[in-house]
Amino acid sequence: MHIKTIASIISGLNSREFSSVEVTQYYLNRIQQLDGIYNCYITVNEEFALAQAKASDKQRASGNFPLFCGVPIAHKDIFCTKGVRTSCGSKMLDNFIPPYDATVVEKFYHSGAVVLGKTNMDEFAMGSSNETSFYGSVKNPWDTNTVPGGSSGGSAAAIASHLTPGATGTDTGGSIRQPAALCGITGLKPTYGRVSRWGMIAFASSLDQAGPMARTAEDCALMLNVMAGFDPKDSTSINKSVPDYTLDLSHTVEGLKIGVPKEYFQKGLNPETEKAILEALSQLEKQGASLVSIDLPHTNLAVPAYYVIAPAEASANLSRFDGVRYGHRCENPIDLRDMYMRSRAEGFGDEVKRRILVGTYCLSAGYYDAYYRKAQQVRRLIKQDFVSAFESVDVIMGPTSPTPAFEFGSKSNDPIAMYLEDIFTIATNLAGLPGMSVPCGFVDKKPVGLQIIGNYFEEARMLNVAHQFQCVTGWHQQIPEGVKLSSENEEGVN
Image (cartoon, rainbow, N blue to C red; front, side):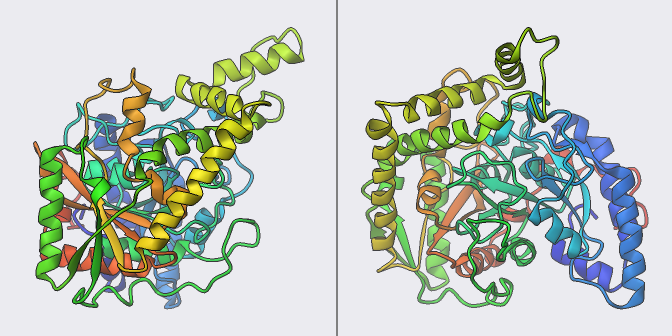
């Protein structure tokens, strides 16, 4: 059962090969058996999930049911879930029980999905390794001595370890694509504004975007069909019709023009990773696509611009966590000032504090023009690079991450080295473009991700390219050795 994709689970439920209760219980059993190794989940909703599954089976029996009816998924613990703890991976929100559902969560409920639980993540989505979570690091199923990537590392590792067939994630500077690459799964960041941010705890409001994570491009298309759409509750949501993202999956890539940025193949890229990417591009050439060398001249400015803009917005967004209204409050404060200071000092981890300090500095009087305004000007130049490139190509492709998964602790004491892990993903967030990562090989038995960047609102084209690549390659079907162990309770649900 655990090798089934979302598409095959839907097919099995439709043909009554198994029930939603059976498949949900199967995944809950695997979580109980294996999550102690990988630490993918912060909260598991066993009782609630089984109640949802029973209701789904009853709805299916009536003959009138939505597509995802009875399909188990997981949500990154950054999405508010009514009556279920939403921690954002932080001590600050360890006791927070939202009174409402995020729009993304609500959409999956309406689609009939069963929620297994909330996945682990870097604290407030700040990190590229999942080492900053208050609940401990998530382990990469391919090598438990290495990181799964971040901040959506819990979702990525849960899919790679087959503890859920699909999960939601969020991407501020690569936080869906980078863990997808390091864990050997498929992950997609939509165009900014395509998926509602309402009820998604904010890190950097002009960069954050929710997206699907699964084993295949087809599954991501199915999930995006549920997630995408205008939300009047979100002022950044785009009022634009949503296509069926599964319709174009089977189209040929014959004649597709793939832009290959020179800046993505320079010093810093692991040579074996580069080799795997070039072989993947060669495979697409064999399918009829053509490669076009392009320039994205301001790529080297993406990381410094991002690490001014994102911390500045984080500084503003996280000011609400003060120990007054909700979240962590220190014991026995002397006065209001003491309560503010100690609650925030105790509730936030080191990386969050670092970014708040940097952001506050960049926004302070005398430095706003020198740093924040300048970073926004650079952001416009980066966006223009992509606009110019898309005049001559259909998609842009290259590496998702400069290296495969690295060992725990190897970069946690060097913030700059950690930040450079997002060097190929950050620019798409600054430009608001859609991007995705698909597995395309291995380096030292660790997965490598191929990044596909599309023009605005062209998620369907990216998914088509990814699906066609996966039709002729088997990288997305590989399973980590420890995950191949069958569950003790899978009899009758194969």
